[in-house]
Image 1: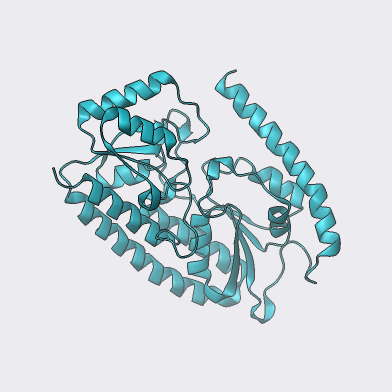
Image 2: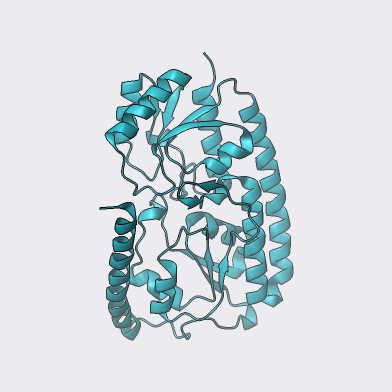
Length: 318
């Protein structure tokens, strides 16, 4: 079966599951109502905007920019692979009741259009990737745009505009929150650049190709990925494994970095065959998702700091 056939079948399966979820949603809606109409509504009297974000990163931007004037629901949950997400009845209900839906864009959420249609939502759907310069790969544009803090600045600005349009009475507050966050992201970018510049060996191997924007921004060299694709559902052949092991040995890579939202088994096998250490467990990188509350990656800024500290500590020294 070709990759194209697998992708097509995956879309069909997801649509069938969304249809099934709609039936469950109707049952839930009949017995569970908060008294406000589904779909977009006004924000008179300072009611919190109901914001639905597709990813944990976009949800974090919305919480920071929106402050106490927003109530944010993230469809994709912490430490969940964004590429494997399928909407639940609760997710459809959240979309149906939203004032604004925020998406990452760049093809990451191929399930969202069907979800919105099934939920009956008719309000604004904002693509936070607008204005971001996209890097290209064999499978098209790379959707992991947040891995560069400069892109995160653009995404947060897109979120601010969406919130201000939905709640004009709070626009001044949103703008002030964005200004403060923009300064924090600029400082983060400079901090990461200083740390990565200190490395003599900047060769990186990750679980899947989720760090291209980070690599490009800070001058690292991506030797390869355990899953050589933007999408974690891509299949890995025996030849892919052998080629990556050979590249690790030839280029003197020091470590293979796993990700919090992906199982580490294949990465551990490749690292063992290549004779290098594997970075897993609490040290694993935050790739497709932020971490749960209380973790080192429960906000966007903390996730980038964690990733940078992990990379620098494992690539430093002889």
